[in-house]
Length: 135
Image 1 (cartoon, rainbow, N blue to C red):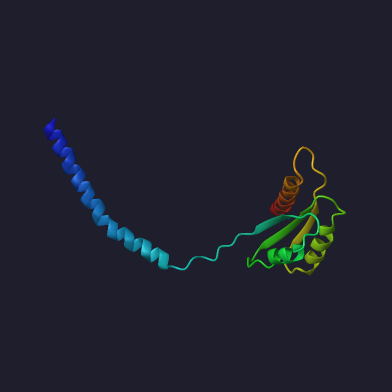
Image 2 (spheres, rainbow, N blue to C red):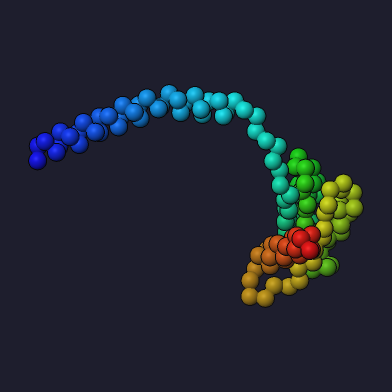
């Protein structure tokens, strides 16, 4: 039994020495990979922004969303009702923006909160466009 213990201990020492030898090699690999430039990967993205009413900084905040530094960004503003005063601001900014912007009217919620309903309508609008692009 003692012989088996020493045999396993010797194997463990050999394994530890091998691992210790590979440590600096792995460190060189990591440093080399970190020195390489990252690829400019920016997949298409959609930003869903639920809006309601005229907040004091509504237009400033929406302009900040539209000014994001991202190459392929679509913005979807969602309001619950067609008569919401935020809709007019959203549509005006959508007309001024060089990037794709849509204004979606979600309708009144049934069995959930208005913000959740607006977010779900925005996601549904994003998926409709994505599925249309696949066809």
